[in-house]
Length: 83
Image (tube, rainbow, N blue to C red; front, side, top):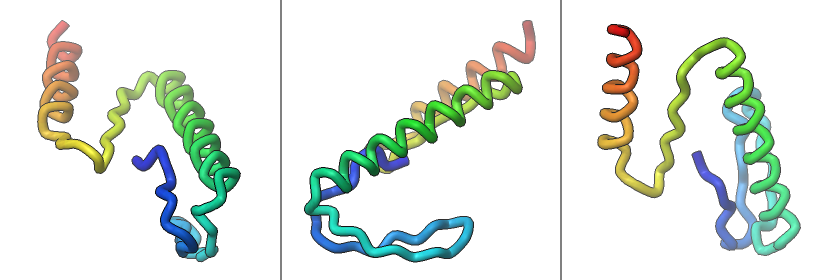
């Protein structure tokens, strides 16, 4: 999960589901703010949906190692299973 769009100029973004490609100018503060806002909105909606379905979720980011976080998640799941 990426929370912020880096200020690197014009970049192509591809929708993983539809394959649609758009070009955005990441130098624009407005573009970066919209990216952040949309990401926060989608994460909130996904979290709410998972909670309503009683499904555990785990958010992993590319900016830090994930092994410890993943291990904690599975330990937590294991504890839930044996209650």
